Image 1: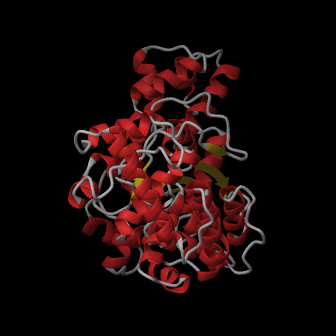
Image 2: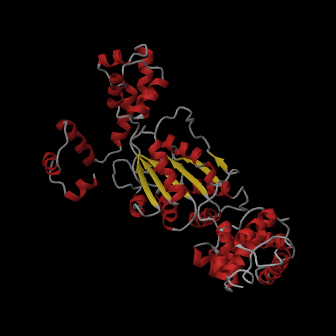
Image 3: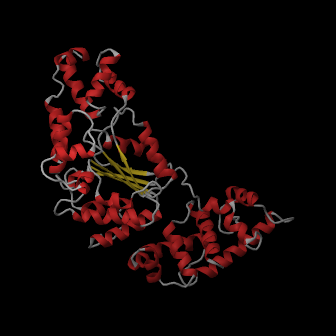
Length: 453
C-alpha cells in the first residue's frame, strides 16, 4: 500500500463514521508513517514541532482511525488495519456490482447512498480501478477538493468589531478579496490606505461574504497595541476550541502550533489597525520598540504553505508585505481609496442630506470619497445647516474640527521627507515631475529616498 492509497482509504473510513475528511496535517502523518518516518522526521519536513505531532495530532488521529476502522490502531499497525478495511471494501463492491467493476461515478454514488459503516462503505480500491484512475479521478477530487466547498457551520469570533450596518460600495474591492482568498488562495493580504477610507469596514464585510468559505474566522484589533504573544495565544485558544492543554512558552513555538491549525483547517485571521504597532514618521513599515515581534508571525504566515489567510488593515504596509507580495504570489496588497460618486451619494442619502446632483458630487470630491469624512461632515450639515448641502458649501468652511483631527493623525505618521513633499505639492497645487519636486526640496535628497517617499 503506497502513501496515496493509505491516505485515500483512511480518509474514506473517517468520512464514513465521522462525516468529515482528514485534515491536511493528519494526511501528512499517515503519509510519513507509511514511509516509515518518525514524528521528528515528519515535523522537520513540514515545519511543525515533533512535540505537537507526537503528543497532540498523532494520538487524536489514531483514536479517530480506531473508531473508523472498528479496531484499535496505532502508528505501527494502522497499515494492516487499512488493508483489512480495503478487503471489506473489495467484497462489498463485488457484491454491489457483481457483473462488472464499478465506474467512478457508480462508486461515488455508492459512497453517498450506502449505509456508512466500516463494513459497507464503498470505495474504488486499486484492485478494481487502475491506480492512475484512482489518483486522478473525481473520487480523489471528492475526497481532496482543490476548491474549498462552502462551510455552513463555520465559527466566527469578531470580538469588538464595529457595526457595519451602514456599509456602501467597495464592490470592486470585495470582489478582489473574494478572488484572492477563495480562488487564488492567498495567504496574506494587506488592506492599506488613509484613515477613514473604509479598511476596517471592508475587512468586516469580507467576513460576511466569505463566511461559508472558512471553517473559522477571528477578528482582532491592534488599536490598543497588545504585544504579539497576546494575539498569537488568543488565536491558538480560539482555533483549538480551548483544547491546547497549556499554551506554548515562546512566541516561536506558539507560531508553529498556529501554523499547524492553519494547515489542518481553513481559517481567516484579521488584524485591524496594524499601524498602531508601526513606527510613526517612517515610511519603511518598521515596528515600534517592543513590538518588533509582530514581524515573526506575519513573515512565517506569508512564506510557509498553509490553507488559511491573514488579512491586515493598516495606514501603511508592514515591511513584510513588500518583501513577499506579487501579482502571481500568495501575498497581495490592496489600496483602499474610498467611495466613488454613486456610492458616496448613497451614503449621503442614508444620512438624510438634501442637495442637487452637482452639489453631492462637489461634496464627495472635497473629501475624496473618504467614508469617515463624509459621515463626519454629514452630522455637521444635519445639525447646523438643516441637512442642506448647498447651504454648507456656500459657507466655505469645509474643514471642520473632527476632519482636521483625522488629517492631523495621518500627517503626523509621515516621515520628515514625506511632510516636505506634502508641503510642496500643496504649494504647487498641480502635479509636478520628479526633477521639479527635487529642486523644490530643502537640501539634496538621494533619488532612492525620494522614490521611497
